[in-house]
Amino acid sequence: MLPLPVLEEAASEMTNYRGCGMSVMEMSHRSEVYQNIFREAKADLKRLLKIPDTHEVVFMQGGAILQFSAVPLNLIGRTGKADYAVTGNFSSIAMKEAKKYGEISVACSSEDKNHTYIPAQDDIHVSSGASYFHYCSNNTVYGTEWKYVPDTGDIPLVCDMSSNIMSSPVDVSKYGVIYAGVQKNLAPAGMAVVIVDKALVGAEHPLTPELMKYRVMIDNDSMLNTPPCYTIYMLGLVLKWLEKQGGPEGIARIKVEKAKILYDVLDDSKMFKGNASVPARSDMNITFRTANDELDGVFVREASHAGFENLKGHRAVGGMRASIYNAMPTEGVEKLAAFMRSFEARFHD
Image 1 (cartoon, rainbow, N blue to C red):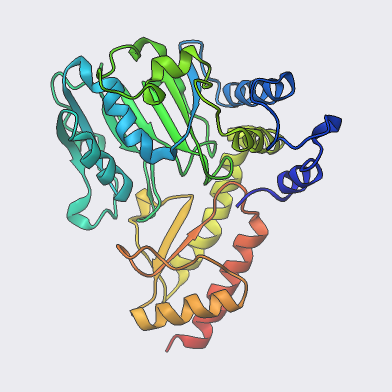
Image 2 (cartoon, rainbow, N blue to C red; image 1 turned 135 degrees about the vertical axis):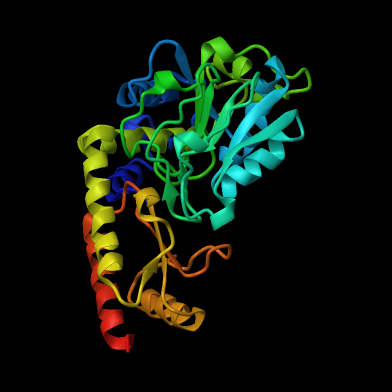
């Protein structure tokens, strides 16, 4: 979901961006008009996340999944080894991809309980000589979220923040690489934001494609080729909107309130049951189900008729999933909670 004010502003500028006579979709990425759009979006991102000078921002096509390859290609060459925390669907896919490029160890996993929890710090076993430790901070499929930053000592942290970036403050200095596909919280699909500690670049695998080398992308300010211009423009508009909400600090307060509305329904319910363990419950993706698959199907169909879309859960979990990303207004969450209570009143024996 994108904020309505952002969509309205984009619509007003669709055919003529601020009097320049053309759409952002049409202009050269090298033109001064577009360069201003690009520079402002990048500066706003750095300011809102308080990104230190030790790190650089690059915009890369291919979304987060391309980073499943780019991360090991750029980083694993220092020792040939890396550690992965496997706490859901995307961290599992990322680890599988990384195995093509080096020796990968599972530092911790929640697979034993179908990823319903997040391992504790004491359960993380970091390998000696690992080039980096990778984890996914929010697991969209299973509805779990890391509530702490793993302590890996001198091993650089790499984090996939695709589904919860900009939803709370982040100490970027603790990370070697942060990456996020933009399509959940920042912009339309088509790009990943990658925040890289500049001290880690330059040791990439010799067969790494130029477009996937962090060093090359930093040196060319994300413009080795034509970047996803319109997505970056939309990112800039979303960042302005986020700033008006109080930035990550303001959004953090709002997201906790929104999540509590739905979790209160689950906690009070005799019909609905949450998928995730309470300490690991995500503020972005609330996963739940009824007593059986048939009733789940009825809920999804009736919810759709009532105007609630995309509530069917992932096949790995079943049930339902309510994604309440940054742009979802509190009113929408309140209406879903009311629908859930009404549904239970009608169908619970």
